[in-house]
Image (cartoon, rainbow, N blue to C red; front, top):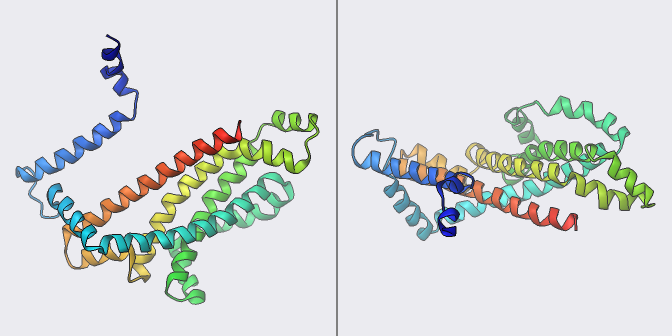
Length: 260
């Protein structure tokens, strides 16, 4: 009886398994609808053909090479923009002067689309990896900076006063109380930024590159290779999910350690 309760439909509805079940249903529907002739649009190949092409591209090595190139551009840009955004966010959240100094400039620059900034960056950096890395860094800077600043400013005054009561030095209070208290908002910014980083990395490869997943997708589209086009897009979906999942696991470990 206990086993029946453990695997009851009601329990399934309360877990993420229901979400994965929906994904499986959609994929099965895709395959069945195309193979049975319900959908005859040549722009939608059978899922089995996409999976077969995906395996071929992996075995051939071209997909893995393109993925590595994209992750390299994304990683360097994410690291650079993330570190600067984290530091500036800490300063703006902690010190009123820093917030008053930087907030107007931030709000003036933040709404500008990156597509409008890239032509200016080309003038200074040319077309190459530096342009793509800086584009990713600029894109991830703002979500990390804004969420870090909001998290630091949102730390409970009661927690800070408690630290002062125990006569913690300013740096210890900042490390042991402020940063752990802001960690939820900080990781929210990191997760938002990783999706933005992947999008910008791929976009930059489509517009100014000759390598990476963006170039792979663009080339497939230009050659009317619909199946490889789906291979590239689904690969991006998998990468995006895995990166977000990895950050979620890191957040759990860090926040558990921070509150020990």
